[in-house]
Length: 80
Image 1: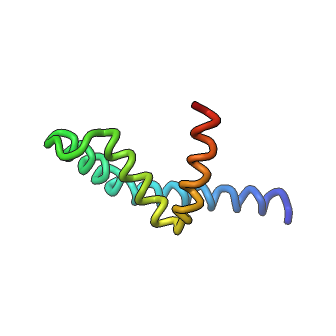
Image 2: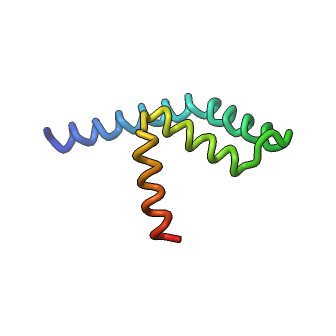
C-alpha cells in the first residue's frame, strides 16, 4: 500500500469516527441526564450508580462472577 493510500485510509477513518461520535452525543447527554435525575431525586448516590454500571457491564460482558469473586478475595487480602 502506498503512502498516499494509507493517508487516504486515515482521513476516511477519522471522518467516519467523527460522524459516529457526533451521532452518539445525544445518547451520552441522555445518560448524563438519567444519572443526574437519579442523584437529584436521591434514588441512588453517585457511588451506587457507579457500582450498578460496573455490575451491568460485568453481566453484559458475560464475566464468570464466581471466578471474579475468587480473584477479588485473593487480591483484597493482599492489598489491604
